Amino acid sequence: MACRYTINGAVAGFGPLIVSTFGYTPLESILLQFPLGTLCFISILVSGYLSTRFKNVMIPILLLNTGPVIAGCITIWKSSWEPPRPVGPVIGYTLIGTFGAVVSQIIVLGMSNVAGQTKKSIMAAAIFVAYCVGNIVGPQLIKSETKAQHYPELWTGLIICYCITVAATLALWFVMWKENRTRDAHAQRAGQSYNDDERDKLAFQDLTDKQNPYFRYVW
Image (cartoon, rainbow, N blue to C red):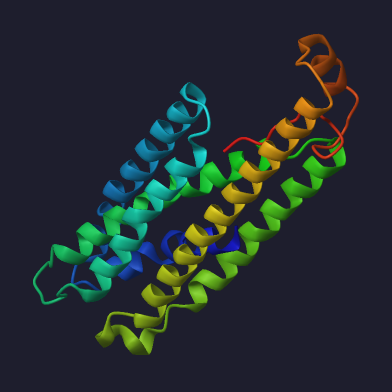
């Protein structure tokens, strides 16, 4: 989770400053935050709608939205910053906006796959801690003395963080998929039938996802 938030710390705090180093005026740098914000807003809405409309699409949506973030970082880093007003890095900067959907999906994914009041509270606290860590680490990747090299530490760090995000998400998906199969097989061997009334009753007993035999992980 902290890896996903590093870009928020860098972009939210230093976005206009980063864009100004492309050769734009302070006012233009602020105005160029609108395309990124618009893409962020749209990606969150679309991802949220698809997640509620279709079953088990959260992880595919999350992975799909990491692609533009990585591509955007590479585009900014490797494109020309030659004045006046280079277009390449601005396009890359705008693509980073899909990080909003990545963050929102991981929050939903985390909260949807724990049960029990204590575990939900711990998960909420873990998300907050990850948010803080990511926002602390992100700005540390910006080294003003490497401006001529297009801030290589920043883009390398963000690319690595989002590659870790992809790997961790795939690992999480495999663990949840395997656990669901194990639970289904165990229920079948025990002759357990799916009972809506029993499931609803257990839902109000504050059982954890490990204790509730009807709980299935979603992704």
